[in-house]
Image (cartoon, rainbow, N blue to C red; front, side):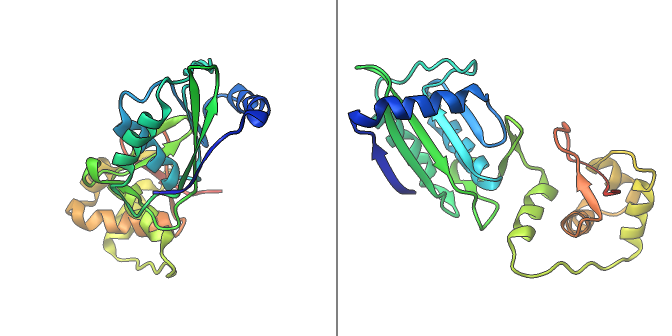
Length: 224
């Protein structure tokens, strides 16, 4: 749910729009996303969860991918539709929205999201799927990524045990090359349900690292 919401007073409109234009000029990135319309409010709610699962940030509704400010006609309806989905987020998303007049008939909506201190945040509509922000994209987390998020949010330290399974995984990754999760599982000759917790421990403790942007969950040795 929202921690608060604002509507700008007319005195501040121009100053706020200048701030928005400056923000938009930097383009989409890790902490900034543009949406032209709210015709898929579930996808906007998903993007807000992805920001909460990453380092927080801002979503601007009424802005084209190119950075053109087009605004929306019915901001209150759009906010209501997005919040219908966002209320299904567990744990809840700390999100503030601000309605900013663009013209007499069009408005921008700025959503500011705090990074969640209890990850991963899931949207009820997405069932068990977890999304996170990587660069300017909203990506679905694989099983290791989602569990690493939860482990890093835990107040407890990381304890790692080195058995034969871990040694097999490390020898396979020892050449420094990027390896896909399915190939690591195949090489280990162990069931995936046993390999995934090993991978989670080794990523959470910094021995291995996830390779961002790969089509499938991929890993390499974390060699400085």
